[in-house]
Length: 55
Image 1 (cartoon, rainbow, N blue to C red):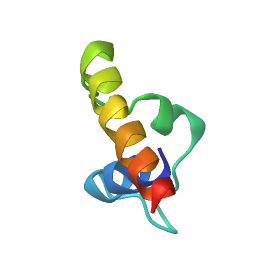
Image 2 (cartoon, rainbow, N blue to C red):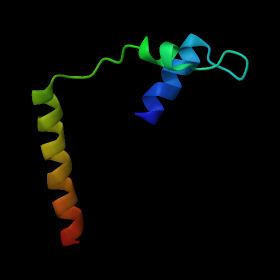
Image 3 (cartoon, rainbow, N blue to C red):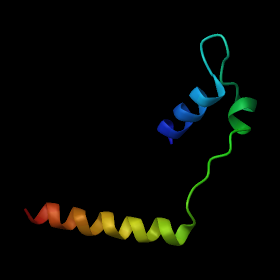
């Protein structure tokens, strides 16, 4: 989440003089894949982690 907020802040132009206030942060829209896609991708991660632990 931090990475996404940092990238969005850079795109908007947040800086030391143009602070990221709560209202400005609330106005940021972050698009994410639907939950089915997220779950599918996480299953891939879990399977890879299992393989790594077996090494």
